[in-house]
Length: 408
Image (spheres, rainbow, N blue to C red):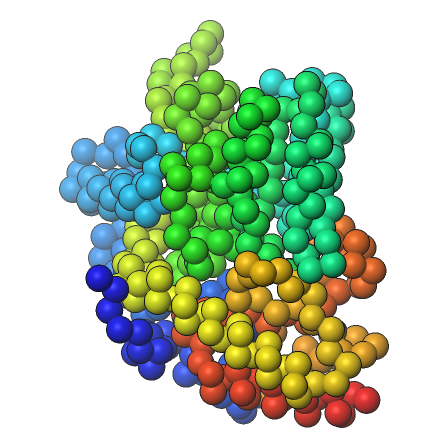
C-alpha cells in the first residue's frame, strides 16, 4: 500500500530546491527537461567515488566484485520496475537518444530501400533524426502521423499507413510539448496485427506513469535516468530478448566480446553484447536509489499529485491571463503546460520569469516539426514533478501575469 503523500516531506529530500535564483526562492518548473535529484542519489555517487570506486566485470578483487554487484542489482531493479521478463532484456545506455540510435542502427540493418517507418508529428528530434540518418544510408521512407487540434494523434491515419513495406513504428508515449499521453498499447496492437515491431520513446512517461512492457507488448522501450530523479548520462533500452539476440552489436570494444583475435571475433551474450566499453557504473548504481525514491513515495501518489497540479494551474492560468493559448488539450495528458500569450515572444517571458526565480523552458523543445505543424516558432513550457506545490503554482501564475503586463 502506498503511503500518504506529503509534499513537504518529498521536498525535504531535495537540497537543490532550497536554492535561490536572482535572489528569489527557486521555483523549478522545467522537469520535462530534467528533474532535480534527491540527497540519497547524490550521497551514493559521492560514496562510490570516495570509498569504493572500481571498474566492473572481470576484476577478481573485492572492490570490482562489489561494483559489479551494484550495477547488476540496478539491472534487476529496472527489470522489475518495468515488468520485463529477464535482465537480459535490460541494456544500459547513455540515455533515451542512444537507445533509439542503437535500435535504428542495429535493427535497422535489415531494412531496404523503399521500406517504411511510421513516426508521428509530435516526436522529439531524438526519435526523428536517427531514422533520417537511416533514410539517407538505405533509402527508407518515413510516414508521419498527424494530430488534431487538441494534440491527439489521428489513429485512423496511423492505421492506414501500414502496408507490405512497413518495417517499424516508432512513437512517443508522452509528448514533451503537448503532454499528450498516447494510447500506446492500442497502437502497438495495431502494428502487431500487421506484423510490425514497435519502439516506444518513454522518456516523458517513465517519471510519471507505471510502465509495464509486458502489458504494453512493446518490442523496444527507451527512457532516461535524469528525468526520473536519477543521475545524468544513464539510459535504459528494453528489448524483447529474441529481437535483441537477432541484432548485430551497435558498437565494438571491451566487454561486448566473447573472444577476440585478428582473424575472428565472437560477441558476448545479452545484455553485454550492446554495452561496449566501461559504463558509467557509478551512475548506474545510483539510479537504483532514484528508483528507491519513486517507490517510497509511490508512483500512484506522484501521478495523482501531478494531475492535480496540472488541473489547478491550467484553470488558474485561463482565469488570470488574457490572450493565453495553451497547446495540448488532450483528454489524457501529463503534467506539462505549453503556452503563448498574445504575440509575446516566449524567450522574453522565460527571461523575466527567471528574474522572479521561476525556471521554465522556452523554444521549440527539440520538436521543430511539431512547431511547424502548430504554426509557431516555439512555446513557454512549465512542467511539474513530485516536489512541486500548489503554492509554487500560485507564484508561477502570479509571476506570469506580472510579466505579461510588463511586456504588453
